[in-house]
Amino acid sequence: MSDARRGVVVRRAGLADVDGLVACSAALFAEDAGARDPSVDLDWPREHGPRRFADGVDDPGRLLLVADRDGEVVGHLTGTVSEGSAIRPVRVATLVSMYVRPAHRGERIGERLVHAFTAWARGKEAELVEVTAYAGNAGAVRFYERNGFAATTVTLEARL
Image 1 (cartoon, rainbow, N blue to C red):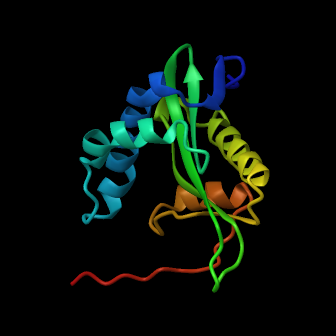
Image 2: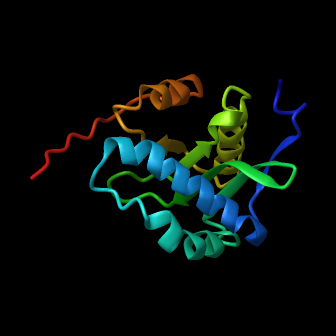
């Protein structure tokens, strides 16, 4: 069933959505970083998310989107925009995090979130959009490639 028929609306988040944003963020941390990066603090969303998301609702340099189904947050996307630097003098919009609850995957909600993000980035006069995904998360990499992103750098890490 399509997301439109199920009543999923992609919209800007408000203060009433903070709990849903925290829940989605916690699920993302557990599912993605929890399986791939032992250095990530999996408690961050619950400890710091409420304030971080509340502060971001009215911040013009941040985007907080929710996928809302009948008042329930079933997905989210957060993004930022930053000015260029002397080394890279272009405005860049960064897709910081995105998550769609497993029961709602395959409904094109993620695609709608990304399209809303890129439209916002254009409105902010960004010249580039970027996203980071774990190399081991092949599904996320494929998703972002299907939505117009391409790998341009690779970050290599070594545990000490």
